[in-house]
Amino acid sequence: MTQPDPRAALIPDQSARINVATYTNYLDAQRAVDYLSDQKFPVERTAIIGEGLKTVEQVTGRLDWGRAAGLGFGQGLFIGLFVGLIFSFLGLGSGNLLFSIAYGMVVGAIFGLVWGLVGYALSGGRRDFTSIGGMKADRYAVVADAEVAEQARTLLANLPSR
Image (cartoon, rainbow, N blue to C red; front, side, top):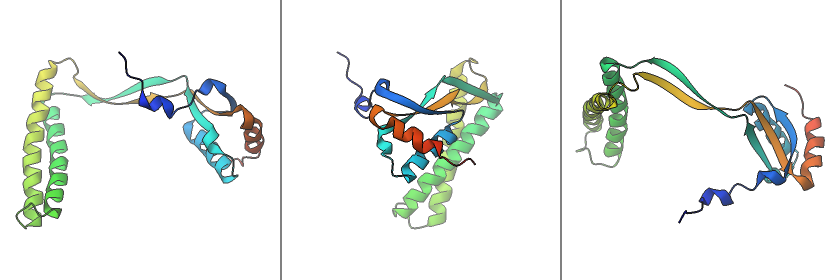
């Protein structure tokens, strides 16, 4: 038996809403909703919908043993710094702030280095590159409930240009 998505109750059905404006970038759509809010419009009756979604993955470089070790080392170093700070603030670092931080960074860097190398070895050469991924939409529609859509359009007609 499939469990219902608990987020579905938080996101109303958008098919009953009317498009009041369309923008080519998200910041402009966000600016429009912010303007509606400034005009005391009931913004809880609006939504910003990305249309024409694409997954974009920008390749940032080649991944080899040295880079895998370096990335793992760096990530482990910062995680160790964070853990060392927490331990020292909680009084779990034998009373010496610098020792707790340094110890956390050293242990974190070693674990990170090993983890980076093991992860690279387990990939078997199937993903020998690093990348940054995200979503991109062709356009962003600001939609509103049918009862307030005309009011939103009227207000957005007065939205000052940048």
